[in-house]
Length: 170
Image (cartoon, rainbow, N blue to C red; front, side, top):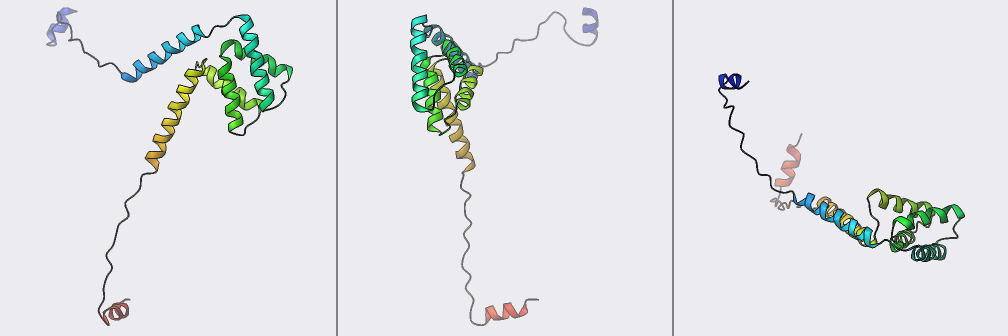
């Protein structure tokens, strides 16, 4: 094999130089966010008594602001409260009320999106919301750029010049 490489004019014993890659800042930020989420998840572990108290506060907040919960909805919210901070669930309910979408399905969709995105704490949720708003503003700023208006000079015609232009037009 080495003889074949030498015949083609390649050096068999020399390794290609190592390429230094600059660290991708976005990847580092994502890693930092993931580590922060893991720490918050570990810190958010509550005892059984705290969970039941938090669940009751979620239930009462929902029933105060939206409507009475069914037994099935209670069970589902209880499952989410075991995974997520109760403040996050209450914030999801508040968001539904703020957008005048007072339905359980809307709250459930918010919680499902949080679960898919591995968001289990209120701090992480608020950070992601802020990032989302910033992206929306950047997108709107790009689309709302003003196109400069071309200004034209007013033409001045002498007596009869305009009429002759009009008459000579075919």
